[in-house]
Image (cartoon, rainbow, N blue to C red; front, side):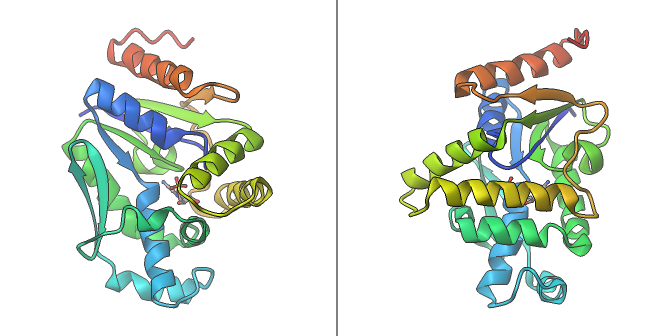
Length: 227
Ligand code: DC
């Protein structure tokens, strides 16, 4: 099986780009952030505090997660309920970042993610895919962009969805989540030594898609010369 790991900070466009490239090249796209989001969502829904470790670990036995692909689109099921849309709010983003620092949460999700990559040719996006989940991935990409660029994209997405937020709030959240994700003790966000760095600051979407697609195609063709 072929696996492409795409890691990077929030809002770098990983999911949009990975979904597009996977669709174009016939890979299954796996958005691992949706799994952490589902756990954050469940903890909040139970009226528990995602910042409290005991609240989070105490919630895990009540959680059953499954990724299903319908016409190439990933849907995430939490205890058999499709929560794919409910997990996209700013409150759930923050809760996901908080629960993702809990080692038991990461252990809980590890096998599920590896199982997906054993069964399919995947493009998997997350924070620790190249470093922890798929250390032997066929290709690792670290996809990033400046915080202001990422905040602007996320702000536009949220406005489109009708959320009432300001750019400043989104930028503050992006910076806070970057800090949380890269400073946690377990599986922090960092570039794997053998990952290719792709910085898409100022790139229109099509240019980012073309860049990532060409990296995957080069690797598939075995013609990667490190450039
Ligand atoms: O990619 P995203 O914004 O949907 O991810 C939500 C949160 O989940 C993010 O703050 C960090 C965490 N996460 C993680 O720790 N490891 C992953 N592989 C994917 C996401």
